[in-house]
View 1 (spheres, rainbow, N blue to C red):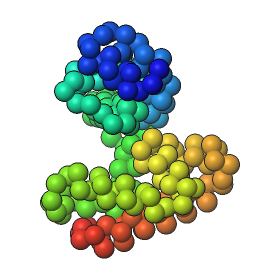
View 2: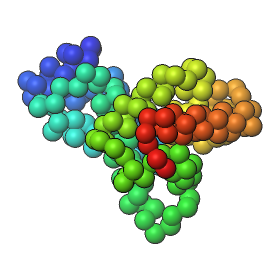
View 3: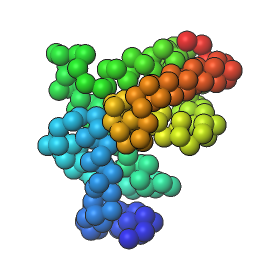
View 4: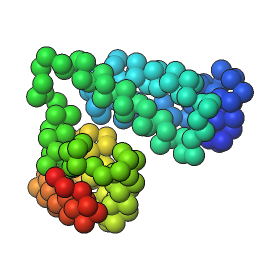
Length: 184
């Protein structure tokens, strides 16, 4: 079913909206959540919570890009779940590593001029400047939170090439943000 028809079902408050969403996007949502949590039962719970949050958000929201809308919800739910699961034992898994890598490049909250959406828009602009190979590696690491070895295996590249690509892309991002007036 087309995304606009699914969204229309949400506006009609038809429960089939959730079934159609699950049918079309379950694999995507599980993939994102499992990439963060590494526990299938928790990933499935976040997937189900995503459908509830979507039901409560549409209407009034009318997403232009349904998969992006759903992906953002499941990612945020998964990160929250990760935080609660690892509250006492920080340092394990990919999430702390990913956040540490990005903390060297992204500005502090107090250093962000304007609205929070501005940084999001700049990130989108930055991603469009990258070659597809670099963008794919960057997104797999910092959006889907795949490990370097998972990225290397999926892409067919060596570990050193993936690490070097990530390092160069982070440096490019840092320069890009500095040119846009962000300070670290």
